[in-house]
Length: 334
Ligand SMILES: CC(C)(COP(=O)(O)OP(=O)(O)OC[C@H]1O[C@@H](n2cnc3c(N)ncnc32)[C@H](O)[C@@H]1OP(=O)(O)O)[C@@H](O)C(=O)NCCC(=O)NCCS
Image (cartoon, rainbow, N blue to C red; front, side, top):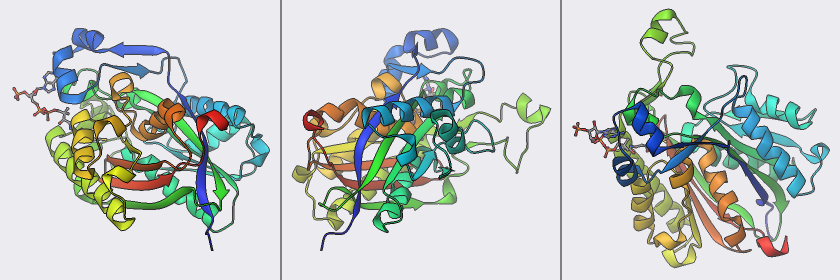
């Protein structure tokens, strides 16, 4: 008997128009294009400009495009989950706002916060509702406006992040396509190495927290790098082993785009050549929960029905995770 799986049946992305280049960053902090490219692989990133626009704006644009492209009406959606670390507000959640902006009403919608692993977490969670038969169509969004929490006087972090959103439609599939397996993990040892210190309930905003620049991303890059390389690679190797996949069986590695060197190490460990690795870090930087759906959006035309994809992510917490997806459609015969 074939069990029902959650298949990705459409993907759409949104990135803001404004391009923040390495050359522009050179004018803001003591850095240079050569350093940024050789250490991270990033050439430019997108920044959301405009008063009153948050992550929901980008998420809603991605969802609007997704509904249109897949000929789906808002009434058909059973659930919307948004992975974000930069919600518009502490509450209400960004998923509620996105639903309102695109005309989706009277369904459950909520956010997931797992930093850069958010999309893999959200996909894993959302697929459960389809596997149990409870829901038929779910939208999973990854949306982050990292520029809202990036300190543009800190050269060690401001070169890394960008803004963007991506969304996928999940539908029930009983032909063996979809999310076939996933692993999600976390370890709170990550707190001192990657965090936004103030603004939450432990350290609510005060003049002092603002003066001390505690509302921005803090990162101990080297520590995070070490964990990221190990955990992303271990986890990806584990899911391959569990499912009897060799490097040759994997059509695409879809890695979180934090640093090109971390991606290369993961691919190497999996025995997957860089020609089979989705890469768009050069143009978008690290968009946190949006990196993986933005990769799927960029590479959609190259994907074929039956392709084995391994999604892999690592982020603050620490959190990490991986998903084995059998792609459900070829772009040319949608
Ligand atoms: C942030 C990161 C790119 C820094 O690269 P790195 O190779 O570790 O660099 P280091 O931190 O060792 O710094 C090396 C030198 O470059 C300097 N440097 C740091 N940022 C710089 C910049 N933007 N431009 C120029 N020099 C810079 C440092 O001050 C240091 O100088 P020093 O040797 O004189 O002390 C890297 O650590 C990284 O990618 N970390 C993980 C990020 C990540 O995965 N985050 C996950 C969250 S999703």
